Length: 541
Image (cartoon, rainbow, N blue to C red):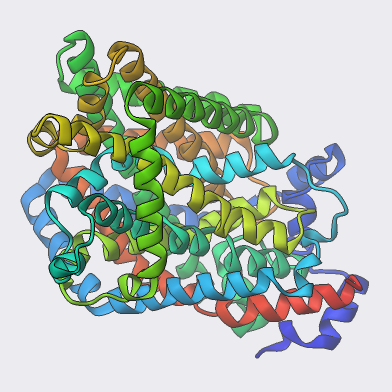
């Protein structure tokens, strides 16, 4: 390994003065004190090349999508299929290794070390975990949770279809297949080892940007140069694609829901209005700051989600949900390794597991930035448990409540959920579930509001991460963050004018950008355990 993980370097790093524009990465960006904020503002500098290239690439994609929609869609689909086929197995192994290393680190005595050399966290545990969870889930927290288990229930995944003689329950198989996509591996790559490397690099004077994930192999050379700039651009584009996609889908989905509930025409102006409201919510949150805006939205999301979970279980079948959860979780755990590494049907994988793994991998560098921003003062064990263990358990329960209830209703009346899903796509599933429950109007409105706030939180937090990635030093201003939030909304609004195709193409594009991101995340597998050990020694824990 390079200079950065040298034990001597670790023991004396606090005695050295870091270079201007780099040394206070943790102090200025993560420390929320007024003095730190003032210092950060004074030294804040925009990286014009990275910002310009990132915005330019997005603009070119949008223009081409408008001018040549069929050609762009076909080209992206072809590139997506090639990337999924060539790199799919690598992503499966990478995510599995990340999870296993994070899990082992939890049980080491080194995990008592605190991140960021701060004695107390900036946020209480509930608010902290809420911010982490809602940033990732976005619209997936509602629409995929209702739709994916039903898809797998109607059409048995190949892994289980090949085991038809083993007597595996169809409900458990449908849930276990969903858990693989949204469970432990997804969460591990988003907030565990990468965050540790990012925070350690920041302590060493590196900027809080994606390029710092190369610090373990390049040392301080990772702070500058064309490779560093390319890493930042790719990561910003990847997260932009992954965030614009849900925003665009939200416009389509909420418009569909408003049509189902109130009869409001499902037309482009309504979809634009939905995106405008979402962007406005995210903009207000941006100017409220992370400590107030994102924290408030995230906490509200969690309480609303808990309320809806309780309502759906009471109005549906709590016993069916509980029984299904444990049977699905048991199957997920017992077949965990074989399901994770399954390569029997690559075409199916590219549409499900590999697609989601690529999507989450594309998010990983900027999620590491955001999680680092809110995690100073937490122990390594806190971080790993609260990103690798607790959120996936909550996510699998949420998928069971929504998806399991949908399957319960489908069993009672065949076609009641699967019919609308096949005809109307993702938004139809949650609307159909709501329609088949008592108090359907209230439940439907609750899901639409929850989806709006989920996506607004993701837009806010990712606009922070994208803005931070475009700074040579200091913390991004609310103005820059709001500009990114506005660009996300405008791009989504333009792409949905093409219908599902424009947003689908962008969603597939994130899997393409995940190819280089997968190699950016690779050094964390070795570096994170070494850094944790160094921090533990320095802190005498």
